[in-house]
Image (tube, rainbow, N blue to C red; front, side, top):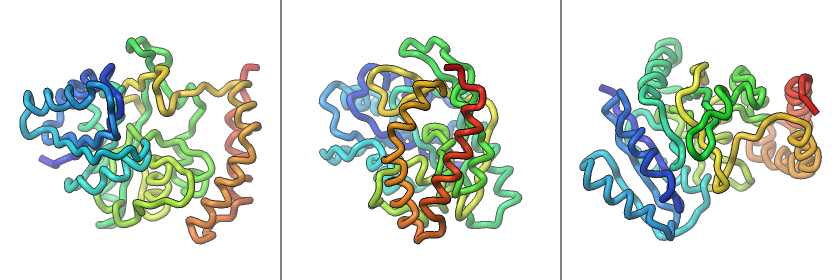
Length: 278
């Protein structure tokens, strides 16, 4: 049975991490290892992790480097601790459907048949959006945010507008050859890795939700709806977007220009906002 590493970065997650750990341990695909790097928690997060390590020996590995890196850098750091052929990123506060690993692995195996051996492959999925108590807010993040998964097939479009949520991704080990630990511009780890997979390998997706994406006041990133206020935030953030596109162009050795990224972002979002309710 194929082994899968589940990479979790924890930080002050005492309120929800136990529920997430249980959902991981109850996966239908049993050959998994949960690898946790704590990013400097000061609550009881570590105590909860140690308790589960004792209750489920051999299933959880824990690394505490006593340094706060922030979410994205912590997830990238976790790649150094993974040795399985496949790995997945995991947030501390969500809940995974029991067949999430199994369904992603099935799709991964389909892609491997058609792809050249040794190529990076990424699989991602839709998600259900829930509140802090797991009440359903949206049956589909893709519909709520008007996200088109086909964008992931074009690395330039994906760099302009990310549609891949990190906590839904499964990747094979070959993507590691393309990931730098030090990234000199502000980009979230999931978008960077998705772009690299799209540029140098292959991307596909599972069109139904495989997890409950919890929204609460402590979220680093949330499921913002696409509406008039969302558009206004984007307009106000235009200067930051342009800076991002310039830096992204330089990171990818100018294989894409900042103006091309700006144009792609504009065209993608015009389509998204066509049916916006103000």
